[in-house]
Image (tube, rainbow, N blue to C red):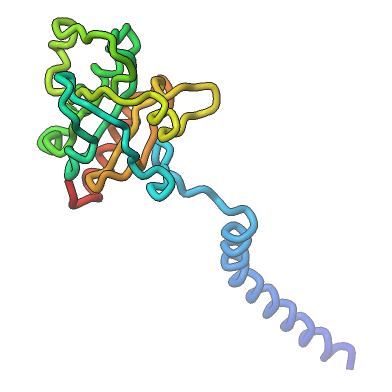
Length: 197
């Protein structure tokens, strides 16, 4: 009796072992998805919820004083930076980066506009800005702007480049001193994935 029970028990253990080996990947995937919850983030910039950051009335004007809004560029992807009209070194570096990032998109660059939101009434040195020709410049109400644009801890709105989609939704913020190559990848992915703008 004992001799015949032993092969049966051995067969059962083999069956359980086969079932366990087959079930292990499924159990591991469920455990990983529901317990560990891996991050599938592939973007460099911080995605923003457009429902939280609808473009407000910024009391914006062109440099000649003509009232205008960011919605005037609806239908285009907008790279936006914020700074004083004096546009010191950091400001000019961001203007340069935005120009280069647009150029790096090749034939897709026409889908992108560059916008500089100026937060004061200081005069803009047009000669110093010749290399950044084509950048749209709007003077805005600084308090309304601060209330609208989100920042990372320890930074100001002037530290970031923001991205607005062709439907006028604020949807991404790039970090302070952003890596241009990683920003380029984000822009390229968005332009490839989107048929608008």
